[in-house]
Image 1 (cartoon, rainbow, N blue to C red):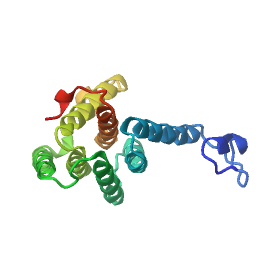
Image 2 (image 1 turned 90 degrees about the horizontal axis):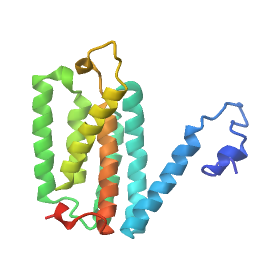
Image 3 (image 1 turned 90 degrees about the vertical axis):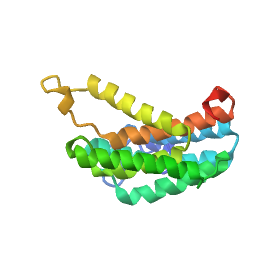
Length: 205
């Protein structure tokens, strides 16, 4: 019973019954968030498999968000799973998972971020060069615009609010892998909303 998501936290009296470690409250909140995310994407898209694949994608994006926020490091072994579940989700959304437009988007992001890394290596990490084009590929056209804007606008706003006021903001380290992952999550929520006719049809050609 202690392994049941969310409820197991309270059943176990908020601690491990073997080592008596106090389980942080963010664990049941995370489990609840996964469940709500599945219900949201499933309800809006009316596709069980789209909702399921999006939830599996969320799990691996959560890993990237956590590691980059805590350690400014992206787990490269996690990227194939992100690509896999993102591609499956796109298939059940009704998109062409391997279309030519996706290749153009991927190439554009790769060239831009690679050039940025080579010209200004202190401003971007190698992980961003690898992850951002793949995430943009999964977002597809024209959703890559939402992905790009959501990631950088959110990154700048949050970093400005949480900045160390004793230091120059321009030199603030920003975990872009966290914001890239967050933006991709928003893209799939937006795709779900679009399929439910909650977004203007002008978004897509």
